[in-house]
Amino acid sequence: MPMFQPLKRDGLVGFEGGGDGQILDLDTAVKDGLLGGVNGGGVPDEKLDLKTMIKELDLQDVPSVFICPISLEPMQDPVTLCTGQTYERSNIHRWFSLGHLTCPTTMQELWDDAVTPNRTLHHLIYTWFSQKYVLMKKRSEDVQGRAIEVLGTLKKAKGQARVQALSELKQIVVAHLMARKTVVEEGGVSVISSLLGPFTSHAVGSEVVAILVSLDLDSDSKSGLMQPAKVSLIVDMLNDGSNETKVNCVRLIRGLVEEKGFRPELVSSHSLLVGLMRLVKDKRHRYGVSPALGLLKPISAHKQVRSLMVRVGAVPQLVDILPSLDPDCLESALFVLDALCSDVEGRVAVKDSANTIPYTVKVLMRVTESCTNYALSILWSVCKLAPEECSPLAVEVGLAAKLLLVIQSGCDPALKQRSAELLKLCSLHYSDTMFISKCRLTRTIQ
Image 1: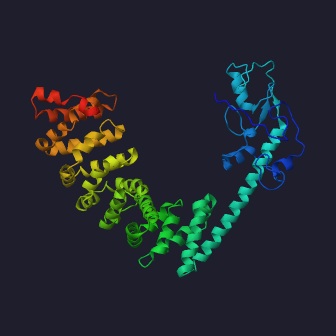
Image 2: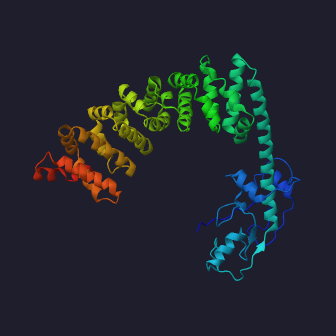
Image 3: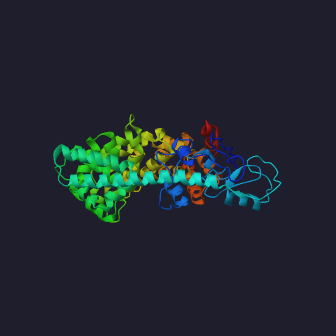
C-alpha cells in the first residue's frame, strides 16, 4: 500500500485537520499560486464534470493536497477520518472493506470509522481543475482557428511563403492534438498531399512529410499517397534529406506499406533499400536504426524486395551490425535475415557472410525467445544448405552447448524440436567422444 504524506500549505485549514475546514479567501489562494493555480478568478459559469476534467487534462503537477494517499490520484470526493487524514471516499471504503481499522497514512487505530466530507477541499479541487480546463479549451480553440487559417494560406501560397506556411503548420500539428484533428476534419490532408509531386522541392517536401506523419491518415489518404511520383519523391528525400526528414520518410512509407491496397512494386526500389541501409549503418545518428529496420520487416515479406536486398549487399551489412543493436532492433534485423533465408539466393548470401554463424550463435538464449527463434532458424538454413562447411564452424563457436541450453529450457516445444534436429545435424561430423566435448558449457557462458 503506497504511503503518502500531504504537504501543509500556508493559509489552508482543514486538510490535515479533519472535517470541513475554512479558507479565508479561496480565489486569492488560487490566484496567488498557493495551489499552483492559473491566472484568473473562480469557477467558470458552466457546470463542468470533475471526473472528465481530470481525465482530459491528465496533469502531472497536481498539488499534493489534492492527491489521495491511497491511489495517488486526484480526489473527486474527498472525505476526512477522525485522524485528520483525507482520502478519496471510494478508496477509504475499499480499505475498510478489507478489514482494516487503521488510518492508511499514519497506521493509527481508528476510534471512529465515520468519514466527513471535506467540502472546502472539494471546492478547491474543482476550482483548480476548472481553471486549467477552461484555459486548455481556449488554447485549443485558438490553435484550431490558426490551423484553419494556415490551411487557407497553403491553397494559394507560392515559393518561400508556402514553405513558411508549411513550417508553421508543422509546429502546430506536432504540438497540439486538437490541431491534428482539425487539419484532418477540414480536408487538410488532401491539400497537403497535393504538394507532393515530381517537381516539388525538398524544402517543401520535407515539411509536407513531417506534417503527414503527425496526422491520423485514413485509407483514402494513404491510397492517394501511393502514386509512384509521390513515393519516388519520398524515396529521394530519404536519401538526400536531413536526418529528421529521412526518419519521417521511413515512417510515412511504413504507414503506406501497412495499408491493405499496397503494391509491392512501390518499394521494390534500389534507392529505397540503399537509403534504409544507410540509416541502419549510421553510427552517428542511431535514432534512425529502429524506423529503418521497422520498414525492412514488412517489405521483406515480398520476394522481389528480398531479391533486390541481396543484390544491394544488405545481407552482410545486416549481419555485421547485429552485435551493436538493442534487443528490439536485434529482433527486427534477425527477422529480416530469416526472411531472406526463405529464398535460395538469400540463404547463399547469409551463408557467405563471414560473421553470420558466430553472431547468430551468440544471440541464442541471450536476449529474447523471439531472437533465439530467428537465430536458430537462420542457423538451420545455412547448416542445412552447406552442412560440411557450416556445421563444424558453428560447433566450434559454441553452438552445441547453446542448443543443449535451449532443449533444457522452458521455451516453446517447437523451438526445442528444431534445436534437437540441428544438434543431430551438427553431430554427424564428429565422433561421439569429440562431439560430447564440444557440448561443454564453459565456452557458452564466458
